[in-house]
Length: 161
Image (cartoon, rainbow, N blue to C red; front, side):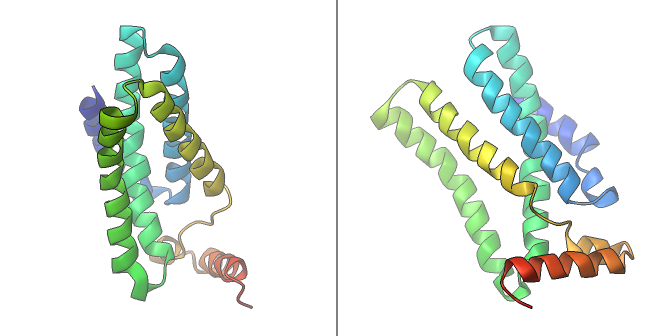
């Protein structure tokens, strides 16, 4: 069901990253993923809920991962894009390795790992509400004044005048 949700998310929701901006769909994907992580802790032992949650997790993961990657590439300095993009993908891949090692050596109980993922997702969701829209996206849409405000906000957070 995860991959069915992923296909649905790719074919229906991903386009909003190019039409309404990067940050709003990213926030919605993060909120959705965090809610799914939370619900999975409490109701995934009921098979029908497990399948429904996996569908929504696939749908929201598409937004969270793909639009999040694009957003991240657009707000960092161009000389760091390759390194940051590689780190992003490496950490994403290490998640599966870490989960496999957890189940092999630490515990067969998925609840602790799920709680960890929920906490990380909740932190990321909270941080997203302090991020501006992508200045590159705004410039591509001709919103130069909003882009200037976003650049100034990023500069201020980086300690630049």
